[in-house]
Length: 253
Ligand code: MN
Image (cartoon, rainbow, N blue to C red; front, top):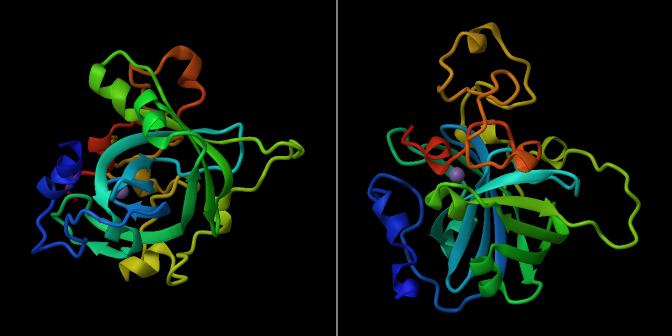
């Protein structure tokens, strides 16, 4: 029954006569593909997806993946997506759920380390990635929180330290390799517009400084929001200080 229900939430949130996103089709022959999509939605973020049991298990990562094992990136679990979503690049129209441009930032295959289903259940999923930009051992670790809903949905995405490697700090893969692995385009080019910067690394403009705190341009650093209560103090420095939660990342734009 979990199987049949897998894409219900995906379906419920979208109007397929209006969005170019793929329909909620369950894949019969399941493989272990993975994809990372850069998504300029309500808030710019990266969607991290692992194929399992005919769907893409999905997390929204506000700050994107980091190659530095010292970085713990907040990853908010979102609804399963159809496997066909893994080749989607384009623009979700305004007024639709998750409206904004989607760029295929990385893709490849993944191999679970141990039992992936059990890992998901227990909140400790270890795996290897074989992508163009992301490789090696990674982990998704669920964060315990106070709210029951939040406790189940918030994870940390962490690059595992490779045995035998020196502890040198890797560069920022997000700024070094911003392009699509499919088209070579940037997110601005996917959107086909003169891009209004909403990246954390971009210098804050005067206009931005006066925009509403909850607006789409809200940035970590420029305007620090209080941490959600569910983040325990010892993790407060690990997780992003930006407001989190699926609703804030994927709203109707
Ligand atoms: Mn997204």
